[in-house]
Image 1 (cartoon, rainbow, N blue to C red):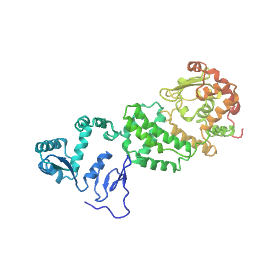
Image 2: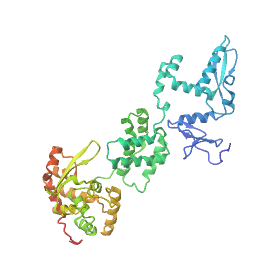
Image 3: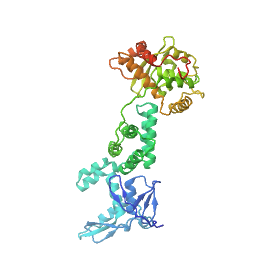
Image 4: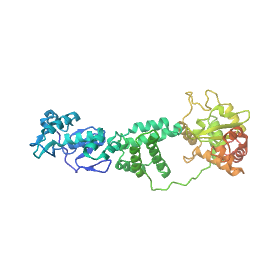
Amino acid sequence: MAQARAGQPQKAYRTSWGQLIDGLYRGSDLRWRVVATGQRFREPDERLAIMKFKNLQPEATVAIPAMVPGPVSIDQIVDPVTSADQPGAIATPAQMEAWLDQVTSQIGEQPGEIHVQASLFWAWLREQLISRPEAVGKLTGIPELANLRHLPALKAGIPLKLLAKQYLDKSAGTKTSRCRAVAIFQRLVKHTGATTVNDLTQEKLIAFRDSIEASDTLRSAGTRKAYYGRIKAVIAFGLKEGMDEIQIGNALKRCKVLWTAEASPPVDPTPISRVDFIRLLAAGNGSWRAWLLLGLNLCMTIEDLCELRWAHFNLEAGTYAAYRVKTKKRRIPRAGTLWPESITALKVQPRKTEFVFVSPHGTRYSNHGRGESFAELRKKAGLPDSVKFCHIRDGAYTAAIQGTTEEKWARVLAGHRAPGLQDNYVLRNAEATRPACEAVYKVYGPFGRESAEA
């Protein structure tokens, strides 16, 4: 067996329950290594791995007081191959039962000791406590031992892959939000090398948090808090699927280390200026015209526009009415009236599928892909990177709020819950949002083929 390399002393391994194990190390490949000998092995169960590590140490014996004529060794009962040729092997319950029967028959009137190989005895005792806790409790006079079957340490850890799959398939969020949450969760899994919830130790979670806090791409405190929140949401969803509440609860407690001390930035909408909007229209050469006009007219994001369906429009009446999907079980009605320029832009759109905007491949656009295309449009229009598509929505909502006497219709236009309005009323009476839509047009219109200087 290769000896461990000389150098800086190896740190003791810290278990998920806080115990330090000297001489044991777990590498990035998830294999365990005995520091003293360099021996490596695989074992996904942390507690079984520690037991195997202890079994690989110089063997000891456990002395059990008993009324026997003299010392009795387990080697007399268990096949010597088990203990001699396979160091660290675990005797089966059947072998231990046979040995106990033999020892029982030897009990006499003289006091003595039974010397048992420690690894075999403790492995057998562990098996008995897991498989027969009630019987062990009865034999020892400690009936409370029956509760050991509920300990999370005696259960297989919940696989993180299963948590991610259940959240992706069954959680109430939209498909986009579910995919984003799972992607962030997978980032945690990759960084920690964990395979079960029990592997998400406090030490690994703190290391992950440090990497997020130091990230150059996650500079906003609000974004980092959202990252942590989504990770916790994926783990907590296991409770809704009936997974072991003790394992999930303990994991969520350890996840309390996922936090950021920096305060979240205040909500600060950035309405796009009319000059910048006209520049975008001019640079779009017609292909972006419907996207830009509908985004402003209906107070929408790129993601909202990707979801637009022809069934949501009545071009003859010049209205739009649909549900804004927040989760699988929560939908908010939104409606609006269309400007003449918006109606014209829609009529020239080819109707290939149920979606208004369809890619050259015949599929609906993705939020990410269309966002990259907008970056190219922004560059063509000569605008700085600070101009975002969401600023169009900010401009529309700001103008609608400031230009109407009843805020509720601006909320309906933006797809926000408007207290006091019934869903059916909103969808049947899209015309009621006309004052809000006209307020936006007053700030940004008209939309002819103006130049950027118009």
